[in-house]
Length: 191
Image (cartoon, rainbow, N blue to C red; front, side, top):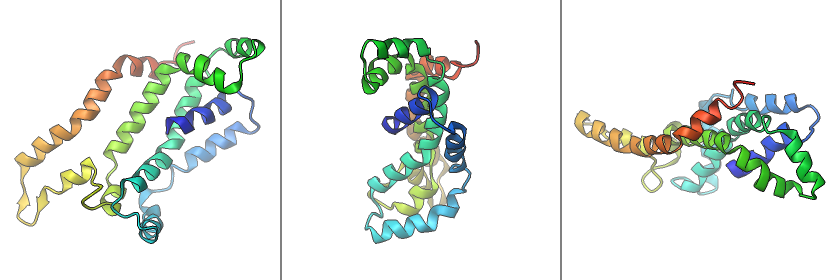
């Protein structure tokens, strides 16, 4: 998802784009639709395409659901990159892809890390689509936690133990990206 969001955010923040505020509004407006409103068409599509209980459909959904947030966040981080550095790279003959990969990306690493962590958490915690579109083979962590509710009742000790185990990857990712996350979230705060 970051491979799609980074060029879009670069185009909206550094390269001149006509009506960039309209594009950003469109990105955010896609997040305003309640998830349950799109559930039936997505389920029917997945059923016709024989993609129920398949991780590929969840990858596509989570990418499209988090792409607007990623573009919005990265755009604000990339807007803080000095234009003089990009202009100097262009004068030296660097192309757009080289500039994005070798010059802008290293400067924006804190913002990229913050965006990646937030999108990872949003994807990790999503329950509705995973519960409806998956079953046994492509079960995600929140769906796994709901399997502890049985007709015999809720086994609280098992749910608590499973919840601790399920939360470990998010906690580890948060600790690993802690310095970059704080740096990235405060990147545009002080001028």
